[in-house]
Amino acid sequence: MLREIWDAYDKYGNKLGYDQFRDEPIPEGVYHIVVEIYTVTSNKEVLITQRHQNKPWALKWEITAGSILKGETPEQGAIRELKEETGIEVNASDLNFVYSHIYKNVPSIYKCFVVFINKEKTKIQLQEGETIDYRYIPYNEFKEFIKTDDYVDGAKDRFYTHEKFFDKIILSLDD
Image 1 (tube, rainbow, N blue to C red):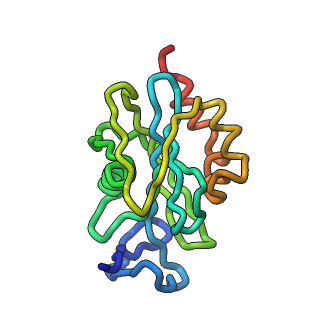
Image 2 (cartoon, rainbow, N blue to C red):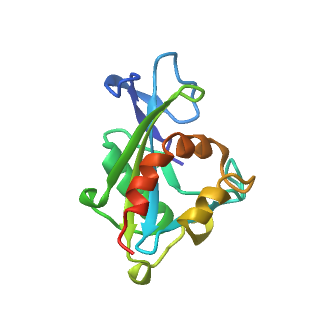
């Protein structure tokens, strides 16, 4: 299996000019970029996927997320992660940027996007070894669901820190 390679960044998102490898300690002051993609239907439902039983946070539910790879922009990483984990194909122009969040416990810079899809025209294709199930959950129910133990922990705090931005983007959808 190939080792996942990331670009090393400073806390401002500037490339430091060397590689960082997944599962190796990240030096002090070095970060990697993680993208989060909230996939939302025109009916204001959020797509969530269930993690594979052999992954960290086994069997927990989450939105699509993952580290960007060496040479990728956050937008390219978001497009790739969404296609890999769900089979959904989007373009950079479909991505609505929500926030950038520095997470110091595991030195990461989270770049978050919302993408809107037509549920009836979208076929979900789960990634073997990564995701095992999916469901759409109405946004207001989603906001309650992520408070439960069934949802991945770290994402909860980032969502609630930026909740007003999600509300503005998602709740502004035409009924």
